[in-house]
Length: 162
Image (cartoon, rainbow, N blue to C red; front, side, top):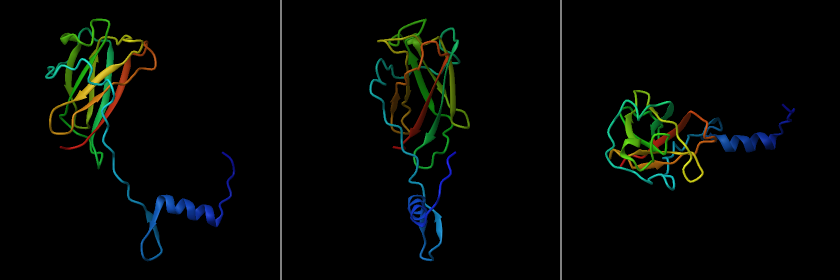
């Protein structure tokens, strides 16, 4: 790591970026603006089928879709939230009802669902996920995998209450 000399000007600039003063002249940490909600991704709702059932696994499995669900603002984990997952896999197209399933988040806001291996559709291996239960704004995600040989994909939701 390079040696850095701190001048009064650099310390004041750094202080104004991450600190706030209270009338006493003491510096205190600035308040965070909060955790921003996740925007819906373009193409995320493609081939969406409302009401996919909660399942233990989609098809024969072998691939893991995982992630977290948190509340916008304070970032608190959200338990019991329904996340629908679908994709073009070795066992079916993303428009096929048997390629869709849903899972619920655990007490820590974590979800995990096993499904068949995702394969490229339109040149990109990708999954589709949706939060659509109605307590928060609906969000559709379409994360792309770095490689079609990956055996897992992660996606994270930050939900805005209605």
